[in-house]
Length: 202
Ligand SMILES: [Cu+2]
Image 1: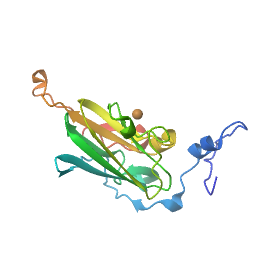
Image 2: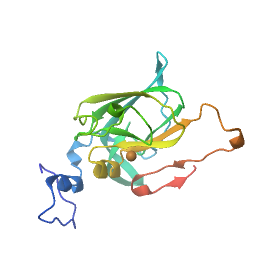
Image 3: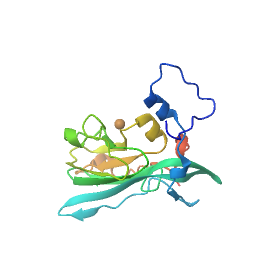
Image 4: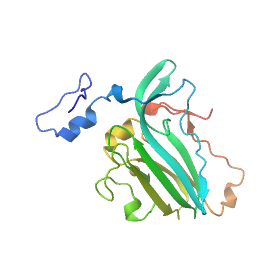
């Protein structure tokens, strides 16, 4: 498969598909476009631009070098140059627009996990949309009717792309806050790196 290299120890069987092989292939390090500074952190809240009452979030996928431990970098698939991708925080009832630019070397798509959205906005590559090609973009727009803690993630070569970092938190505050939760603050997993190495809080 091109110049992709199998990780050491990976064993293929004759009946495995080319797609499965690509899913397990190592990242092509020659395609890395950015190296995150040592103090970079994922899950940073992204402020939307308000355009005619619509909350517009610009998301860009790319292949970066990301720190998982002091002095240890791995190649990662990032959204807005961070892993996890930026935290998207909206309010129930919001009209939102997610403009996704794909700067990865592979096709991708973004799925809004748990949200009920119009079918063509669901982000399932080759099911509800064509995958976004490298260099391409796709605009998702819908009204968010639910409230709760959701997440977004790649829905193209999911096992590979999500494992490489293409996911982030999507938090929808209720339109009417629950009075019984007054004074309760929620702490989300912070400082997450690849492989679920997370510390809670800062
Ligand atoms: Cu999902």
